[in-house]
Length: 189
Image 1 (cartoon, rainbow, N blue to C red):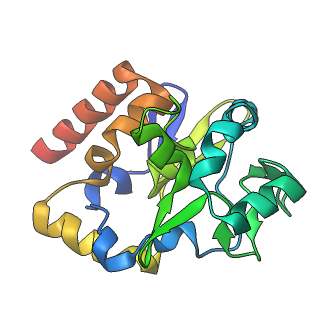
Image 2: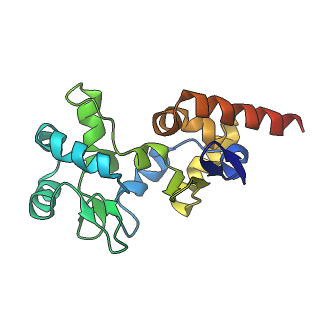
């Protein structure tokens, strides 16, 4: 672990390699697990605002859950998150054949909304836990992503480079440049 500004960063995000392999996992991270995608307070407001524009992209099951529970929920641990369909699929998930995709991201890709998706999804496999004085930035190893780890090793892409856009979105360009400098320095030593 090392400190970068107001973050404590796991060296795993610099040392481990990862490239999503959607053809292998079929978007399992959107349909597996025991909770919805973590959200910030600000993101709950964005979801409420964009829902009418995103709704046409969603499945009827997702719409039903969102209209019954809301565009976001408080999870069992009290954290803010996306609602789930039958405690499984994210309410915003859609399918292209057998592959899970994000309905919000599809609306974004078509220029309907200007928000790509929750930053926690965009950052995956990095998870950020906010504390009072700092944020912990960690690599989340999940066996459903084994194919992504293999592809990352084959292509030699470290986690932090795979999620560069999301890290900049979360922490800013200057923070990312400092992170990259740390990575380069670690490589040389």
